[in-house]
Amino acid sequence: MLSLKKAQTILKAALSLAREKNMKPLAIFVLDDRGSVKAAAVEDGSSLKRGDIAQGKAYGCISLGVGSRSINKMALERPHFVASASHVIGGSMIPVPGGVLIKDAKGTVIGAVGVSGETSDNDEVIAVAGVEAAGFKADPGAN
Image (cartoon, rainbow, N blue to C red; front, top):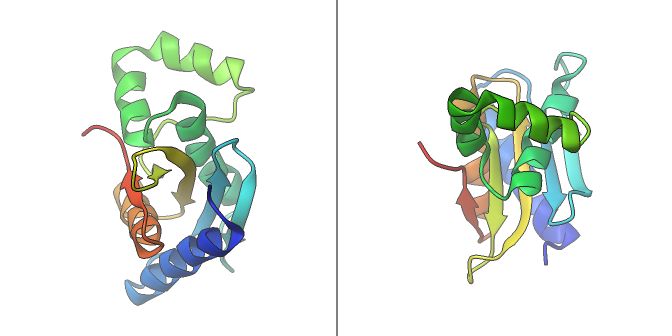
């Protein structure tokens, strides 16, 4: 189970690294295994819908059970599938890197993190760092 304390650790570590690397203002959403928001932050200076995008990256991971890098690959190879899947889950899926699954020591999915505001690759780096700082395994998906 992803506790509130661990979700806040993910969020704090991710924000700390982003500031250390002087990244653009970010939005970070941490979801539990049901897709419910456990922790979230949108930094000052972020654009209006940045939070929705971060949440959509994480929600896509939870919905399809893979990191958003894999969803991006699916979108390129099977665009009709991703469009249909997005429709089924209410359009709340952003199929680009920056969303990672959170897995416990046994490999069980316990949540997901979505980051938005930088390049997709940098968003993913921040998400992975937050997850690892909380002692979990981050799964960004296939390259």
